[in-house]
Amino acid sequence: MAISSIEQLFTLFNETAQILQEELDCSFLEALSETGENIFQDTILQEELSEITEKRLKKQYESLQLDLFSKEEIRKAFQLVTLKGMKENIQPNHQMTPDSVGMLVAYLVEKFMEPQSFRLLDPAVGTGNLLMTVLNHLQRDVMGIGVDIDDLLIKLAYVNANLQEQPVQLFNQDSLEPLFIDPVDAVIADLPVGYYPNDLRAADYQLKAEKGHSYAHHLFIEQSVRHTKSGGYLFLIVPNGLFESEQAGALHEFIKEKLIIQGLLQLPSNMFKNKQAAKSILILQKQGAEIKPPKQVLLVNLPSLSNRQEMDKMMIKLNQWMKENKG
Ligand code: SAM
Image (tube, rainbow, N blue to C red; front, side, top):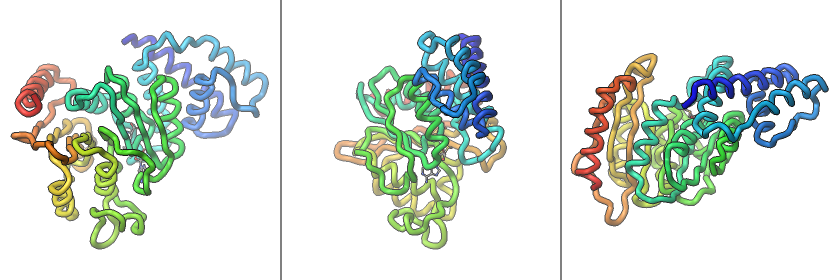
């Protein structure tokens, strides 16, 4: 992948977003979604711009030939500009899923999913970075579906999907409210972690807390399972302490009743600021007729992802496990 292409695109997204931010007096991320939409629609959609601003934008847009860039180049450039915008306004539970994690999830989806064509749901789609990373890495016919409560983030996901020409349906709503989405073949999600404030809605879930607020990440697991076909897979980025909290008992019960644990891959600790923030990728399968549990759950402590040698060893272990359990 050409670094200079990513740089060139980054500069264009960044500079045109800055121009729009100043003129529209909005946040950088709002301006980024506006410029992305302009590029996709091949026009300038904002009516309130001065003539000179319009000219400056037009000149930049005309210098761009988007079809010369690969989907991954576009995603990476868009990711870097989004990260820049997120630094302006840090919200810990809204962070984009990093590339390295997205690529691992893509690798796992590729390994576990057999059909050539399937539907993939991300109920916490955010900016769409995780979903696009997975879609861009799968050489299959995959229809993506994303849901997020945050209207700005989902707008960025929409721009992301459009610029990369990925078929994605997006819903801007609370994912724990009823979803009008037919059961999917697979779910991926970097789950929001913490308490869910809506106790009334939580009351509809088996995984509601007995007292006080429920854990959003538990309710997200239950909601994801409701929207997965029997035998479908879930690839969830979860906190390492998932099975150790005071509400973990109910989660264990729920998993025993409805799911099969296929694997738990602990992400390297150097990816996180502290132990509390550390995460794992949990691989689940929804129970169904003829669905058998693996002989052994795939348990991996991932090495630092930049450690090539250790990563290669891990891939060999994973391939061996696949052969013994899925082959
Ligand atoms: N994978 C995403 C990406 O690459 O940008 C990042 C996911 S981020 C860790 C968690 C997301 O969950 C945030 O975008 C947040 O807005 C969303 N979220 C939190 N609570 C939600 C809810 N009740 N319904 C829908 N989305 C929610």
